[in-house]
Figure 1: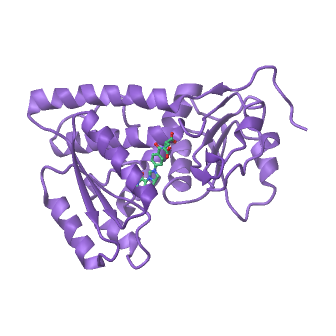
Figure 2: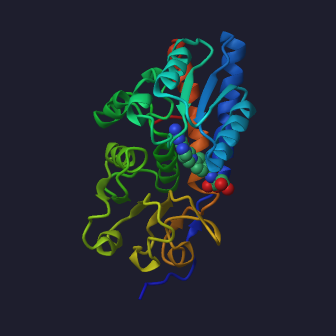
Figure 3: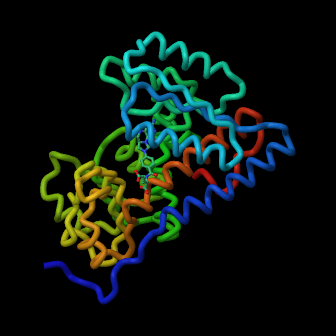
Length: 298
Ligand SMILES: Nc1nc(=O)c2c([nH]1)NC[C@@H]1CN(c3ccc(C(=O)N[C@@H](CCC(=O)O)C(=O)O)cc3)C=[N+]21
């Protein structure tokens, strides 16, 4: 039986936070345009016709143009060869108008995802997925940080201020979310546990956590009675079900116990796109020898 608070959790409005962040990015883009004659450019590569991926790519393109950046979309057929894709990436690496490169994942099964991602020039790797950027993050060096965990970190800092000494539980160990999320929390001096499919007694671990980041990809996986009263719950899940888009957390139950919680949609998703733009602006500043944009990246 869950301990229930009098009031339901504060809703963490990722959509509003992301809109505010995009506004700050737009102002900084306008400034580097007038002061330095530079317009940031983001190239997005989509291989195949997955409809969900096509929707994401379209909304990324729209958001890119809205902050005043150039958007370059490359749609390739599903049967594109590894060599053809690598040739496109080599062209984008060499293109001075392109400051950021994102290859939409997952790629069709015949392509070598790791080889493709690692062909991206590290300074244009706005997803932070190359081995070099992952290693830099893990060793405390200046890195491009993966957008989804970066967005989660921003929401957590906004809610909690310092994360120092907090017990944080990351559920999921992917290279895209779980592992970089754990690194970011550790860098902010949280005590970090990473849980996964082989973890024993996940409910008990969860009940100790001041911070829960759920990135498992299973609808309503995290139960309300696993949540410590007052905890901050960040739901990374984007699951399409018959009941619509739902997260990895049983939101209705968890919000009665948590201190604050992100909804799905309107939580982490919009932050991911805003952080992609933030990383593109940072990449543009670095390649032009300008100071890093303020208040965007950690
Ligand atoms: N190289 C690469 N980088 C990515 O960042 C990447 C990727 N591949 N592949 C696919 C995932 C997924 N992803 C999302 C971004 C925004 C929302 C988002 O804005 N979601 C809205 C709802 C949108 C809807 O209704 O479908 C929300 O949560 O409020 C969701 C998911 C980025 N991804």
